[in-house]
Image (cartoon, rainbow, N blue to C red; front, side, top):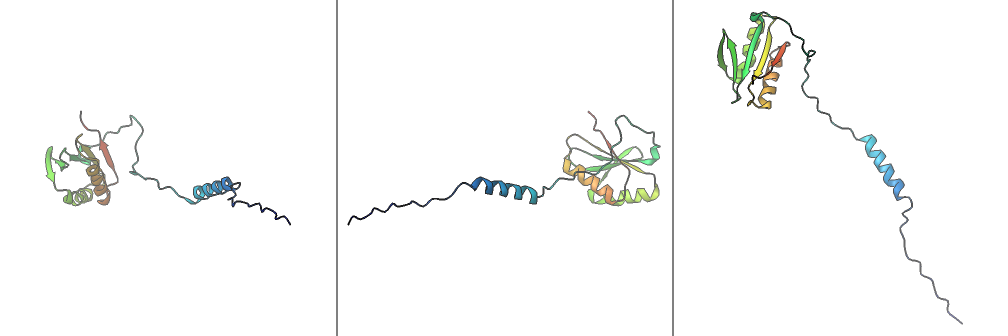
Length: 137
């Protein structure tokens, strides 16, 4: 009797549906993942070139210098102000004058973080009319 040789079949992983599985995983992650978007500053910006005449008594100028120090113009003089006192000062001025427009001006060396912190304090104080003045060159 002759012994028959057994043909040994090597184990193999089927890869025919691998592309389908990868495609389904990509579609799943694209549809189930949400992207966080930065909201940025919520400011209403007027149209370019739009300007209005405002009485000097209705403007409060806030100045940020290169050392990130805050000051307010009072009677044509620069009055240094602690950052913690900014909210209280603006609230006081808003109760005195309901039509007050707060104009924020910063020097070129001032940090963006300080500028945003000042804007936040103004909004917490209840200022709704905020003007951002361009720095002098």
